[in-house]
Length: 268
Image (cartoon, rainbow, N blue to C red; front, side):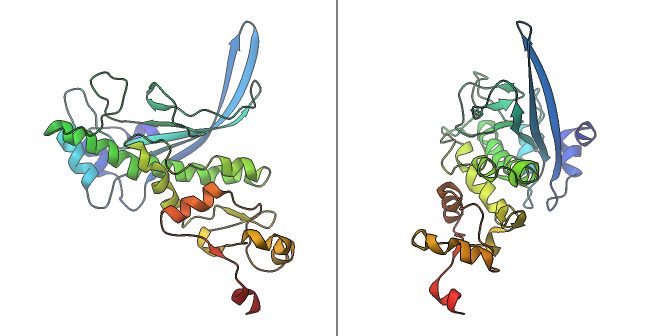
């Protein structure tokens, strides 16, 4: 499926994409590694995405930088570990441009994309006063994060809700991005873009196995903790478990804070 989508020149690939419907491919990847005769099995949720923006910026920038061995195709992906027989420690996320780049992102997932790399081939091209083609290369990385990588990450969260959201909701929410991480450009905008896309998706667990969009739930103020069980027993769509500050702050950052239960709502 992915190879078929990538067949052809960048212009042909982009021309087949619908700005309103990103191409998303999700699958479970099983891996086995052996060291000194000891086997280790791991399972991963992987999401690939190809997408373009409605304004045509990706198509325009791709046309400017395509060539000289560069195939500017708007493709990115995210991977989260589902299980690992050799380790229970959280994943320390890396960023890949096919091959891993130095450093960790601070996220609990790995990121991959057809980024533009600087002359060292060890870092993403970032804005440092470039002009001409260099300016387009910087813009390409920003567009890839905003429109493609964020789509992949948001879809990953939706898939993880199905993988283990009901069995281990705390672990599920721990895979959400953190605003401000990574702190380096162009990835510093990733978390906010992911939260914007999650704002309309059924990614908040309520009750024991139901899921609602963030706009359809109501959170309980900290000083109302003793009313948590009675409110959950009613038809209030109260998140279960209580949402972490990371999730709440993420929606506040994009100016879409979750609604709270208030005395007036309870009275009505």
